[in-house]
Image (cartoon, rainbow, N blue to C red; front, side, top):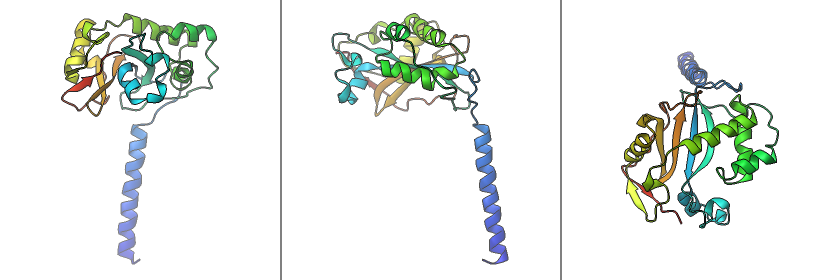
Length: 218
């Protein structure tokens, strides 16, 4: 390698190293409990989950007698730059009392434990307060009639779904995000500030589909 080629190589390497370093610095995430920008309440659409996870047919989420629509998947600390903290401190098992209290909202014991370990430990809240907020946010959310227990499959644009929830809850549409996969309605994400007031979802990814299919509840 001659001197000119070596200089070009070193220049390119230095540029790449600086670019990677700058990206990492910009997206650096603190794993200090309580150090984040906002919360995202993720509500899974149970009919879609059950249709794409046949191994879970016997789970409480997929029990046809319950006719479940939106169920809690988690309450996740998020940052405005798109990063998020996780597993911030060693997690003790969630008490059996809290598990029993949360099973009507989060479908499995395993998911309850997982959510506390991965996300709850970053909230800066006690276990009781973290799950208490989840319960409060979920039960306080007004679900438009057409999305409660639909008896037939339907279609809607992500924007129309977000607007329907915004209108029902006197909240800005930007506080809601539809999550989709292959033009299927997968989940609704709801954003709150650290005082649990509705806020803009910021950099959260938008569903790119013009229309999504909403599976009926069983």
